[in-house]
Amino acid sequence: MHVFISADMEGVSGVVLEHHVSSEHREYERFRRLMTAEVNAAIEGALDGGADQVTVNDGHGGMANILIEELNPAAVLISGAPKPLGMMEGIGAHVDAVFLIGYHAASGTGAAVMEHTWTGRVFELRLNGRPVGEMELNAALAGAYGVPVVLVTGDRAVTEAAQALPGRVETVAVKEGIGRSAARCLQPRVAHEHIRQAAARALQQHGGVPFVVPPPITLSVTFIRTSCAEMAELIPGSRRVDGRTVEWSGDDMVTVYKVFRAMAALAAQ
Ligand SMILES: [Zn+2]
Image 1 (cartoon, rainbow, N blue to C red):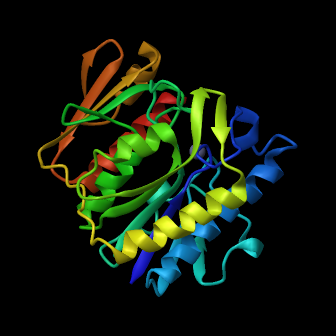
Image 2 (image 1 turned 60 degrees about the vertical axis):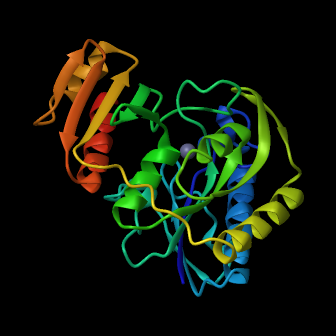
């Protein structure tokens, strides 16, 4: 059984401030170590649950946060950026189950630590009219390969959102947001034990149901500013539906995912 782990940083226990996840800041070294430790807990649980291959993809910021020298040697690490599928590089039909570790809620969610959707310039992202965050978008990409997400960890808000994915998804809320930059956090050793147990359960107790977005798939991105939409609109086939919103439709979720990433990159110009 091949388990793919996509790891983000904002949803790691103890992470509450923007500078905790910024490689420019002195304290970042502490938090990349905590991120690595939560990923290790998920790997240990995957091995307990019967996995014989584990691929970890570093999905935060410059995507080179995880300390490979401290990573469980049973896993292979995909590190660095850019990469074609970004946070989900390494996903494919050869994978049996996906864990999303250290995730955060969608832009606009209340009481959610560092909520956002890909960049601070996306106000709302929708797939076929349904508002989604990175968690759902990445689950939809896995679903396009027939692979289910079976474990989501992060703050309380993202784990509650994960309950709306199809099938039974194991979740671990390692912290509970008080606001965007404050949370009640589990001590890391406690968080690790919860993650390890949930990861094993996720593989042992249920097969998982892929999150498949039926085609035609309409991607709708509302940006925080009209200038972002003006740049996103440069993508061939896109439609400007209002001052801040651009849509794009297609039948293939992998292409839709890449179009969203291209829009986000253009909007950052
Ligand atoms: Zn991140």
